[in-house]
Length: 403
Image (tube, rainbow, N blue to C red; front, side, top):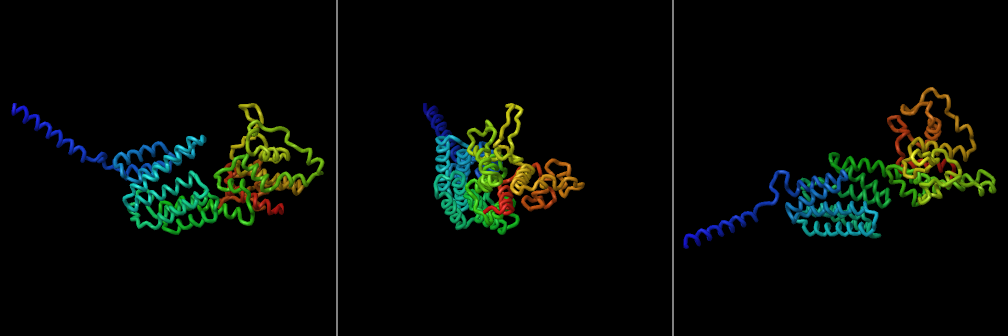
């Protein structure tokens, strides 16, 4: 009996010791299975817009160490990105609340200055994406200042690598708020920080974009439509129609060239089916009414009907057609339509003199309304970006003496 009790006691002791040891063993003990590694990879996945994969990495980081603040900072960005993608306000609100909850957890678990830096930058990015209050930009600026006050060891900034990351995301916030001059200055600050920074390349690209926008806006007061279009990487046909009608006052401009009675009777022959419920229906109808070349309805083989294709990006050659047609209609100079016929050699290696769009491209480039590349190319088939569109409209306004 004593032997049996002794054996049982030994077994209990063994279980107790084993359980104690098990509690002390780390959950993640691989070289690449640790919170910092999973956080860095998650952030890099976010750069690639792989949201679900990034979330899995942040969740693994949190599993490895429940008190690892940056994991929550990453998840806050994930939830904000999910919220932005939702069209339903109720679902969007749920994701936004989750993002804020993760931000609170990131701050609560920020045990080092470097972790707090990750929290502030996550907060900047979340506020910029969600814009959940009128004062969202002020909140971003507060986080920016707080991030720069921290005494961080840049070698320990797991993903951001340098303090200039805060300036980059501040610039992104200014750009989102349509404060273009402040955005350009902030990106310039990043470029001045250090040449080897991981944020130098994206800041250089963003600086060039905002610099083009600032130049495009110089000397003109742009309406809400124009300011929204200015930041786009490509401009859809409906957006371009709105920009032309709003900024050039196309209807008034063209109506002044013909008798009032005729202008009153003039209207579009039909409304394309894909524009019936579009917010820029009237603007598209205005261009159709005046038969502006370059943005005419397009025959669609699937529906066997002429559609406006509002979301299709406007190419540079199409914008050249539009501008040439506006110039021709306003000046009444019919020679514009054939001014560059007969050329044997083109100044652009990617545009031949026999191209249908050659004359239009020459008309806009010789008047400096549109520009070629430093390499000499015109890029006729590339999509027009927002800054290019606004800059072209600005110069065209000057040519037409529109104030």
